[in-house]
Image (cartoon, rainbow, N blue to C red; front, side, top):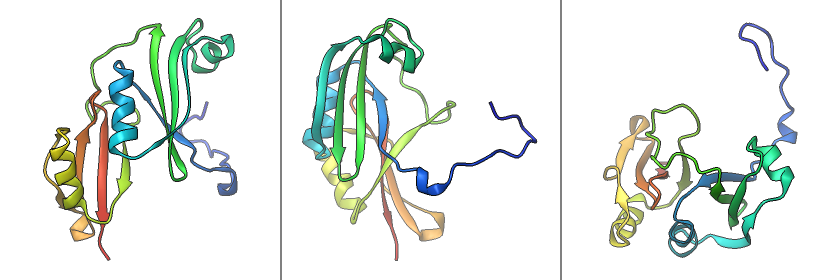
Length: 156
Protein backbone atom coordinates (compact mmCIF):
# COMPACT_ATOMS: atom_id res chain seq x y z
CA UNK A 1 0.00 0.00 0.00
CA UNK A 2 1.33 3.40 -0.94
CA UNK A 3 1.63 5.91 1.87
CA UNK A 4 1.08 9.61 1.17
CA UNK A 5 4.30 11.59 1.22
CA UNK A 6 6.54 8.70 0.16
CA UNK A 7 7.99 8.43 -3.33
CA UNK A 8 6.25 5.58 -5.13
CA UNK A 9 8.01 3.28 -7.53
CA UNK A 10 6.23 3.37 -10.89
CA UNK A 11 5.87 0.69 -13.51
CA UNK A 12 7.60 1.35 -16.78
CA UNK A 13 5.13 2.57 -19.38
CA UNK A 14 6.14 -0.28 -21.69
CA UNK A 15 4.67 -2.72 -19.17
CA UNK A 16 1.22 -1.16 -19.23
CA UNK A 17 -1.28 -1.97 -21.95
CA UNK A 18 -5.01 -1.43 -21.46
CA UNK A 19 -6.93 -4.67 -21.93
CA UNK A 20 -10.48 -4.24 -20.66
CA UNK A 21 -13.03 -2.37 -18.59
CA UNK A 22 -15.30 -4.47 -16.36
CA UNK A 23 -19.00 -3.70 -15.92
CA UNK A 24 -21.21 -5.47 -13.37
CA UNK A 25 -24.86 -5.81 -14.48
CA UNK A 26 -28.12 -7.36 -13.32
CA UNK A 27 -29.83 -7.91 -16.71
CA UNK A 28 -27.03 -9.66 -18.55
CA UNK A 29 -28.79 -10.17 -21.89
CA UNK A 30 -29.96 -6.55 -22.12
CA UNK A 31 -26.47 -5.24 -21.32
CA UNK A 32 -24.84 -7.67 -23.76
CA UNK A 33 -27.20 -6.52 -26.53
CA UNK A 34 -26.22 -2.87 -25.84
CA UNK A 35 -22.53 -3.62 -26.35
CA UNK A 36 -22.92 -6.11 -29.22
CA UNK A 37 -25.91 -4.82 -31.20
CA UNK A 38 -25.67 -1.07 -30.58
CA UNK A 39 -21.98 -0.34 -29.96
CA UNK A 40 -20.69 -3.02 -32.33
CA UNK A 41 -18.53 -5.07 -29.96
CA UNK A 42 -17.77 -8.71 -30.82
CA UNK A 43 -18.22 -11.60 -28.39
CA UNK A 44 -14.86 -13.20 -27.52
CA UNK A 45 -16.11 -15.58 -24.85
CA UNK A 46 -18.96 -16.24 -22.46
CA UNK A 47 -19.56 -18.54 -19.49
CA UNK A 48 -22.58 -18.99 -17.24
CA UNK A 49 -22.40 -20.04 -13.59
CA UNK A 50 -18.62 -19.62 -13.55
CA UNK A 51 -17.52 -20.61 -10.07
CA UNK A 52 -13.87 -21.68 -10.01
CA UNK A 53 -12.35 -21.03 -6.56
CA UNK A 54 -9.53 -18.88 -8.00
CA UNK A 55 -12.11 -16.42 -9.39
CA UNK A 56 -13.55 -15.80 -5.93
CA UNK A 57 -10.06 -15.36 -4.55
CA UNK A 58 -8.86 -12.91 -7.23
CA UNK A 59 -11.96 -10.68 -6.94
CA UNK A 60 -11.95 -10.90 -3.14
CA UNK A 61 -15.34 -12.64 -2.98
CA UNK A 62 -14.80 -16.28 -1.95
CA UNK A 63 -17.53 -18.52 -3.32
CA UNK A 64 -18.46 -16.11 -6.12
CA UNK A 65 -20.65 -17.49 -8.89
CA UNK A 66 -21.00 -15.34 -11.99
CA UNK A 67 -22.16 -15.06 -15.56
CA UNK A 68 -19.30 -13.64 -17.63
CA UNK A 69 -18.60 -12.40 -21.14
CA UNK A 70 -15.64 -10.71 -22.80
CA UNK A 71 -16.60 -8.31 -25.59
CA UNK A 72 -14.06 -6.72 -27.97
CA UNK A 73 -14.10 -3.55 -30.04
CA UNK A 74 -10.76 -2.94 -31.74
CA UNK A 75 -8.08 -3.33 -29.10
CA UNK A 76 -10.37 -2.62 -26.13
CA UNK A 77 -12.60 -5.07 -24.33
CA UNK A 78 -15.56 -4.81 -21.99
CA UNK A 79 -15.86 -7.61 -19.47
CA UNK A 80 -19.46 -8.13 -18.36
CA UNK A 81 -20.18 -9.67 -14.97
CA UNK A 82 -23.47 -10.73 -13.41
CA UNK A 83 -22.97 -11.96 -9.85
CA UNK A 84 -25.32 -14.72 -8.77
CA UNK A 85 -23.41 -15.06 -5.49
CA UNK A 86 -22.85 -12.80 -3.70
CA UNK A 87 -25.47 -10.37 -4.90
CA UNK A 88 -24.25 -6.80 -4.72
CA UNK A 89 -26.10 -3.51 -4.55
CA UNK A 90 -28.23 -2.82 -7.61
CA UNK A 91 -28.34 0.97 -7.32
CA UNK A 92 -26.37 2.67 -10.10
CA UNK A 93 -23.49 4.83 -8.87
CA UNK A 94 -23.61 8.56 -9.53
CA UNK A 95 -20.58 9.99 -11.36
CA UNK A 96 -19.39 11.66 -8.14
CA UNK A 97 -19.02 8.38 -6.19
CA UNK A 98 -15.55 7.05 -5.46
CA UNK A 99 -14.03 4.74 -8.06
CA UNK A 100 -14.08 4.41 -11.80
CA UNK A 101 -17.06 6.28 -13.18
CA UNK A 102 -17.38 5.72 -16.94
CA UNK A 103 -15.72 4.64 -20.18
CA UNK A 104 -15.40 6.86 -23.24
CA UNK A 105 -15.34 6.32 -26.99
CA UNK A 106 -13.85 8.79 -29.47
CA UNK A 107 -16.17 9.39 -32.43
CA UNK A 108 -15.89 11.47 -35.61
CA UNK A 109 -19.35 13.07 -35.36
CA UNK A 110 -20.71 13.28 -31.83
CA UNK A 111 -23.98 14.89 -32.99
CA UNK A 112 -24.71 11.98 -35.35
CA UNK A 113 -23.93 9.47 -32.58
CA UNK A 114 -26.22 11.40 -30.24
CA UNK A 115 -29.08 11.03 -32.73
CA UNK A 116 -28.39 7.30 -33.11
CA UNK A 117 -28.41 6.88 -29.32
CA UNK A 118 -31.73 8.73 -29.02
CA UNK A 119 -33.29 6.80 -31.90
CA UNK A 120 -32.25 3.55 -30.26
CA UNK A 121 -34.09 4.65 -27.11
CA UNK A 122 -31.15 4.94 -24.70
CA UNK A 123 -31.28 7.62 -21.99
CA UNK A 124 -28.84 10.49 -22.37
CA UNK A 125 -27.63 12.70 -19.56
CA UNK A 126 -27.61 15.81 -21.80
CA UNK A 127 -27.22 16.75 -25.45
CA UNK A 128 -23.64 17.09 -26.71
CA UNK A 129 -21.81 19.95 -25.01
CA UNK A 130 -18.66 21.81 -26.06
CA UNK A 131 -15.94 21.33 -23.44
CA UNK A 132 -12.29 22.18 -22.77
CA UNK A 133 -12.48 25.60 -24.35
CA UNK A 134 -13.84 24.23 -27.63
CA UNK A 135 -11.33 21.39 -27.95
CA UNK A 136 -13.96 18.66 -27.51
CA UNK A 137 -17.67 18.00 -27.66
CA UNK A 138 -19.20 15.18 -25.64
CA UNK A 139 -22.29 13.60 -24.14
CA UNK A 140 -23.03 10.76 -21.74
CA UNK A 141 -25.50 7.93 -22.29
CA UNK A 142 -26.87 5.63 -19.60
CA UNK A 143 -26.57 2.06 -20.77
CA UNK A 144 -29.42 -0.26 -19.78
CA UNK A 145 -27.97 -0.87 -16.30
CA UNK A 146 -27.38 2.87 -15.71
CA UNK A 147 -23.60 2.68 -16.20
CA UNK A 148 -22.30 5.73 -18.05
CA UNK A 149 -20.70 5.64 -21.50
CA UNK A 150 -19.24 8.84 -22.93
CA UNK A 151 -18.96 9.70 -26.60
CA UNK A 152 -16.44 12.45 -27.34
CA UNK A 153 -15.34 14.24 -30.52
CA UNK A 154 -12.04 16.11 -30.45
CA UNK A 155 -11.49 19.25 -32.54
CA UNK A 156 -8.56 19.80 -34.75
